[in-house]
Length: 311
Image 1 (cartoon, rainbow, N blue to C red):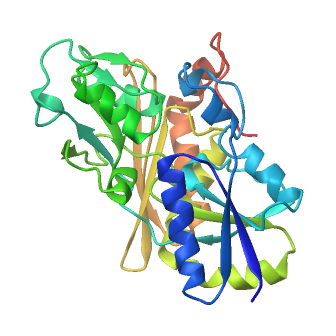
Image 2 (cartoon, rainbow, N blue to C red; image 1 turned 90 degrees about the vertical axis):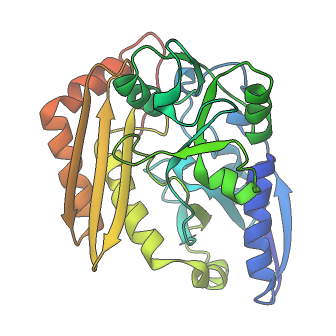
Image 3 (spheres, one colour; image 1 turned 45 degrees about the vertical axis):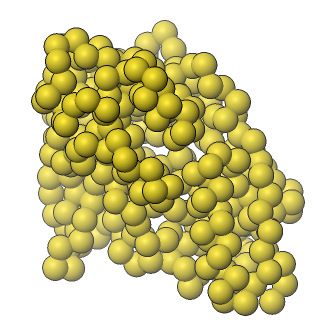
């Protein structure tokens, strides 16, 4: 069937994802190789992601390789992929989704409520920070960068009392020993697309598209399309305090979304149902913007450091 070259970041989790997709393709008779590509986000490790003003910081270099023909498909964590894609590319498949929720990891404490006053919690996500501070304003939030192993080592060394990570990455790498609490969506709404893997190809590359499309999962496609529609309507990148989590119930989508001031002082939530993923995402986004979400986001975008924004 010909050789398929996968472009991937080089982190342990990214390579797990690329190898997972490679195995699925090989089981269908394809020859597959993996090309490691270093992205801007991998190179900037001493700055919180919310303070880096680069759009597509985990995807641009991989897309460049795809456009140049150096690779045939790109594997991404969907939450890293900008909601407005270049017309040169398309999403050939969104795979069956892992748990999209966030988890609380700690050596000593069983859950968020058990943390002592002024406990040190690690996260570089404004979305997580805002929702944490909304329920525990006393917590001291510290930046946390690096791959999964690096973050867990920092927790184990005592730099933090707890850290917040995505359940999906820990489940995939089988590193769940320090998970103490799977955080309810009502408490901490996940990032749009969290837990989903996406395969990106060149637009119009029908040969590769035909080979990939069998991996597309209908449920994951519907839920993530809804979440990404909301994020796009709100003008948000992957590092703004916006959360979106859609689920399928009896053939309908239920979308839970949040936009929050990074200090946790104002948190706006909406939960609505509908059948059309894009229409529902736009509807919930408009409701949040009308209730004051536009003011929150203007404050975030207008700060001294520019937050990645789409478009």
